[in-house]
Structures are given as structure tokens and as C-alpha cells.
Image: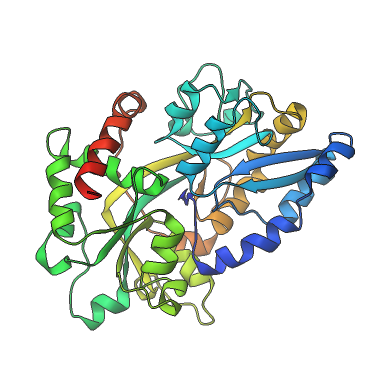
Length: 365
């Protein structure tokens, strides 16, 4: 989360932890210049979270401290990295996913590096890039989430599929992210391309617009402000019981509860598993990085079992290495998606910009 889940990713309880977690292991630009190159700067999207103890372990192993710079939603973060490629903001970029990967590679923001531990990554998550300019770090499914309480109170069955979302009974209930600015928003649009094909997805979005879909800039606004089912949304009186988020968002809601439910069916939120798109997030060494050796060490660490097993309950996405175990909270309350929509990377690369332009003309005008 895309995500994921940039993800990015997770609910209000996780967002609240992000600032202290990163502040504890950060540093200033001045420190970077005076500490003998012992600071590694990680540039990422707004939903990057990692446990402080995990980064302390990286420092203990390598001597490098990690400073984190966040640049908004994943789409904006990638665009910023492209705009600043002649003077990169950091050493490593984390958070480019398979929907945006070709844009980053075509603009040459990454330097080749084959991270140690890549042989432990499941083949389905590895990028088709012989130069090894990016390293897979996590995976998740972008799906419509629903507020169980709303549908129970209104005696209405929650939607299960894309076709359901355009039915009259769900009019005015869905909020999604802007496909032009948000990684989850783009993934959801691509999911409709995968479902309805080149000839049908635009008609689908016309129907979705007529059915009252709301579009906001990014995941944080959609999930925490507009979605009625999130802990933050309930406090902010969000009034949309359907939101584009992650199949692993329900565990984030459960983790923040004083009395956790006994089963997934009793969790505050659920997942429409027939509306999903499979997303993989990557990290890469930024070309021109001031601390390339530190950046390489950090990429190696991102594939370590220690970091990979921290990923599920920090960013609510799945690890990509085969020897990492998922926590019980994640397996018990996260939705299993058996048949997510996918698109070939080369098809995304060839059509993404024109698809987004067409989507914007349909939905935003």
C-alpha cells in the first residue's frame, strides 16, 4: 500500500506512529555533510513507515543512520524524483510501483545495483530489468474497502465486484483517488482496464461518474477524511462507506482497537475482493547519490528477513522474500485475493499516459 499498502498504507493508528518513528532515526542536512558520509537519505511517499528498532539494527550492522524524506503520494513522489534527478534529494528512493515503474526507468533516475538477497524474492515480484535498477520490497492488492457498520445499518449487502459499483443502490457511496496523482488511484483505473479492456473501461468510468463517485488527490485524504469506516474517518465524520484502499487495510483498523474482534467478519471494514489490482513496490539507488555505498547497504537491508517481517504491521503490505513470515493479525484479518487484475508492464508503459488523460477528461471535467 500503494501504497500500499502504498502504499502505502494502514489506518489512523499507523499514521499517528509515522512521525515519531521517523524522527527517531532521522538527521539534518548539516549532519549528513559532517558525519563522514554515515547518513543514508531515503526518499519515499507519505505512507512509508518502519519500526524504529529495525532501523537501529541497520545502523548497528552498517554504521549508517537513515534520514527519511517524504514527498506526498507515490505518484507525486516519483514525479518529484524525476524533476530533481540532476540533483537527487537522497540516496535511495522507495515506493515506485509497477504502475509507475516504466516512467521512473525511462527517465533514468536509478543507477544499476543487484541487491543481496534478490535470489530469495519470488519471481513474480521481480522487475523485468536486466540492469537491476530497482529492488522489489513489498506487494499488496488495491481493492475497494467497505464500512461494515454502514451496510449493516442500511440493510444493504456490500458490493463484491466492479459491476456492483455502478448499480443504483451504491450511488454516491464510493471515494477513490485521482489516477493522475495517486498510485492507488492509478492502480484502480488500471484494474478497470484489465477488467473491461481497451474498448470498455471508459464506458465503465462514465457509469461510475454518473453513479456519484468522488475523486480526491491521494490515499490519506480518501481513507482518513472521506471514508466512514476508518478510525480517522469516523472521527472526521467521513460519509463515504466505500473507498479504494488495500486488501490489508482491515488489520490496520483492528490493530488500533481496544477490544479486537474474534474474526475477520467482525472487523470494522471489509474488502470487495472482486475489485482488486496487484501492486508491487520497488526501491532503487538514485543516480548521482552522494552516499552510493550507504544506499547499496540500505537496499540489501530492505531484503533482509528483519525488515521484510516488519513490513506487514508497519505498512500493511506483504513481504516479497520467500522466508518472511506473516503475523497472525495480518493473516487473520487481511483479505485473500485469489484473482486480482493485472496488466503486462509493457502495456502499462505504452498506454498509461493516454489512459490517464482519457480518465481525467471523463471523470474530472
